[in-house]
Length: 286
Image (cartoon, rainbow, N blue to C red; front, side):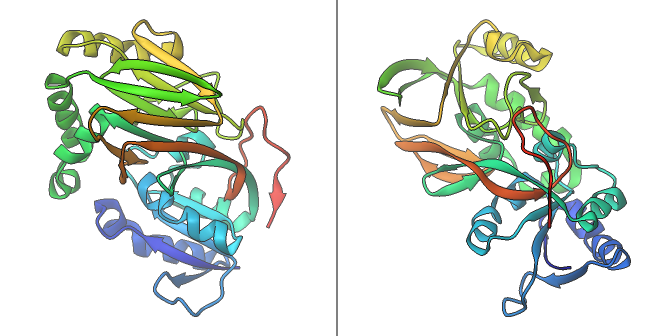
């Protein structure tokens, strides 16, 4: 099997372990081809990086009709947690070499694909506050500091959400449209799945630092959609507009601004994984 290997050069883990991924894949009978070798045919794409690096390859994989493998080298690695992909480099490469795949849903906003979540509000501010050099040097500690700063100065905004012929008016500090059960680095929702054909929209009410911290604490403790101060909606598509434009991030990457339409593409992508969610079909062989 020949694979187009994509390594995130901006990630400290990518720079450190990129060569090791190539070695491991080769030892297991997988031939890695650099992403820059555009003329070389390949059977799959392998991403050595985090959720953002993976998301940037979704459109390419769908267009070429090839599966994607993931060696998790990011900070949050939400998709790896969702799909139970091993965090051990050798074990992740062995999973890819096994050729076992499954289909998952992907989502799209403003024409940009994502796998786990897209959001506006606090999370987008966190991304803007982060500096690449700080993430490379301090890792999760830099993100935690950015998060506290973003929450401290969060201000509610008005949003109109249209879905299934219904319009809801919200006043929120954070709006997230999730495709999976694990997102945001620490949030897990028990009654959602990456292959259930649904998008889940979460809007966090509240104003002020203490209120925001209380709600986030409830979410972290797995209360999810039932946490006080969290409004939730489930549909296959959402249209979101705001009084002023708000920046959107999708899997940690810029994804335009509001107004925006979020939509689900059921079973649109094959990934190397074996763990099955409740609605997943039997594993396929590549």
